[in-house]
Image (cartoon, rainbow, N blue to C red; front, side, top):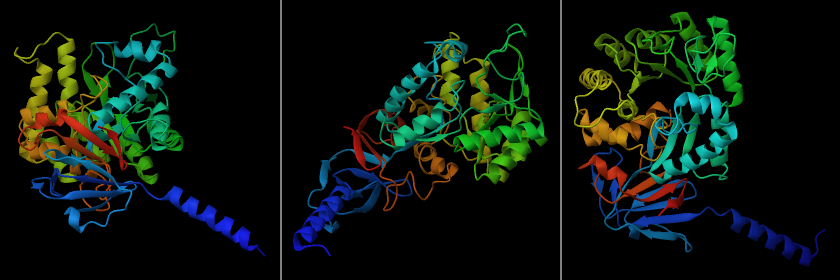
Length: 423
């Protein structure tokens, strides 16, 4: 039996342990708060956060706040859900700094990973609290390590949904153009045939992938036009194996036939879609496949080739603009994804600006980076809405993004997983 002193000591330690485990409390006051439908502002509402979740959105007088609650006055600011970018490459940096092939062949895994940590922080600072990483481009499974480090609060960055190495058909990705006697490292995992692609999916699932990505088309030689790569049977095998493991699939597809096969195979998203036909867009709508257009990457690549704003757009941009217009007319789900890494991390909002420039209303562009993106991630009941029980990932802006989408660049405060990380 415990003595009276022993009971007191045990009680003291239990009390201290309980206090140490008490969730952090935060209340944000004074801001215009984006409504759950994303179309209007709620006034005179405070946001109460307990731990990593929103506890309440109500008048401050109606809240039951902890005595030690952290208070932040956001008077005059506009609070929106943390933004989501569905197509990033944190293991890459802009191609005008270093060409893609040089990064894959000459930069060490250690350097690329360290840089990715800094780029994850820049992404978070810009108000993007969730990203879907669509390929490490020769950096193995480093996105898994980065995701887990952020989750353990070892590093600061957005929530990461990782897809590891991406899957490509043999001879249909880079680096390429070398003497065939040499085995040159690739920026993705090569696999062929129904059995081969299943093995690749299994390996990536075992490594911790959240998504599977494959290339439905690509150029087969330097300077060549993109053509479909995997057969429909191979694509179906990729999707079937991923589905068996409970994972969704994204397909890189710029050609119409590549995209058509990927949609028939059952992918969740088409990435880029530059030359997709109206027929295929209608098939995407019918089957609930989202388009992630990566307009900002198209623009960046055009700039790297010498194009300047104000000049006649190159064919690449004209095709992307026309496809986007058709997608809007058809009613395809359009979700935000920028391909950051091709251009500078932390400037992800350029994609949203281009969505509006290409014909979207600001309210719909903002939805593309919040509720629509959350739905693509299968996290629509967890992310991207300012409401009780949703993740406490929030951004306070200096101006109204529903009136001017460029306001997304004017970040004043970021809350991630219930903590103020940018102020």
